[in-house]
Image (cartoon, helix red, strand yellow):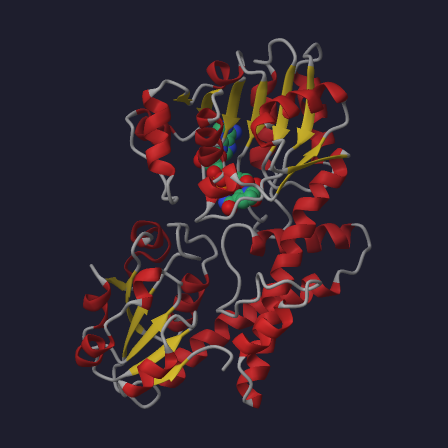
Length: 432
Ligand code: NAD
């Protein structure tokens, strides 16, 4: 199938590479010239585990191309996937639809023959109707269907999740468009639940899922606070809870709060939509407020560890919002650092993959180290903020010699607490 993908970011690029690997003819469209130039030159523009190899393979075999031209990307496509950003509106925090509306308007005039337009971006309920109206207005004779095809990939596992989705949700109001999607996902039909629903239901499924996961994280973080006060261990508690099949063991890891480009913005967008429809979503609002407070609480833990030390130096390990990605959007690490900077902290940081993306957000407000041990030299506290595997294997003997004061605030519970205490560190983990 000929597939055009509008938006070549964390969703568009893995989707494009994955669909090419399945044998489709893919053309990725992005308005950022530098991104397309790099991709055309064979240089990958973001980090995702396993993506680079597949990208090179499919480039070489001629199944994936890149362009800034809407005409080139849309004209020949049987299926057009919209994967542009829907960031929070700066004032209202609803999903900002300017990129979606622009993409719909720009693609309209290039449609030729029957085309399915699938929205992979996370969009408010009713957006399918808006896209349809925008296209119809610009090109009244076009033969097309607009469907909702929400994306559920996890950053860091985007390639894995593309080939092993838990489910594929399709919101379509016409049988003809369903048939195109059935054909596209034929390789998955044996192993994956493909759920066909009304377009509006599909749009809501995406927000309802993300908000639920955000609430689950917020819940376990609050429970971790309770465990710390009462001598219980959150891991034992989470294990005991997770054995109940109604609860399940996943997403019960306490930490510094949820982040990334999805949960924060999608919970705010859901809360906005609920208010617009006079529905009181108290749980989502509690998660939003609690999660903001959580980052401040984590910063306070770091500041407490260095109380009384003159000109303290804070070493931060981890800047990405999670391991396996270089994405720092809404990263708890960045927000915690910003909280610390408000207290005039002197910070040096290291991340195995996210140094460049973090620099775009933090600039020269902090210093950057070349590796984790350089980061720790003469530090008064180590704050672990992302769960990278590398940090688990820190040589604590070496760390003890490098640091000026032996304090660790481990917001990801990465380090073996017993080992740390025998090496003479003051250690503060989460929930135990
Ligand atoms: P991104 O910012 O990484 O990528 C968006 C890309 O779209 C950018 O490269 C931008 O230049 C391009 N773009 C914007 N307008 C364009 C236009 N008119 N024409 C051509 N290109 C245009 O965003 P992302 O993280 O890939 O997210 C995209 C959507 O997918 C969002 O709605 C997001 O909520 C949703 N989503 C993201 C994830 C994730 O893990 N990142 C997961 C599921 C769903």
